Length: 141
View (cartoon, rainbow, N blue to C red):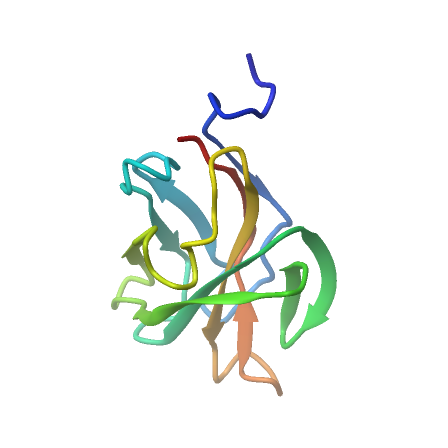
């Protein structure tokens, strides 16, 4: 019914990516289902600088803060989701999440969290790093 509650699993893109040396920027999407109990959620990212590292992170709300060569679209407090990922030679990367890991274990059904990918882009500007678009995810049981 599109009303966020414990029966809905929603993932919505927000906050456009900033351009990087590979093109128009990194877009992230989900794989699996944002269910706390199924523990099948993952991320896929495209458009990254080849062979560069990145780190997914999340927070309790949306933001709009300049950060590096991009915009941080996640509010504080921020929790990093280790370990880092690396873009392949085509600028793609994936990460399977573990809902029991410290950075995710506090998420409960009906919680909404905001995710983003922070990644290195050494040739992209003076800061040498950038950020993806954001994903707003409401978790279900």
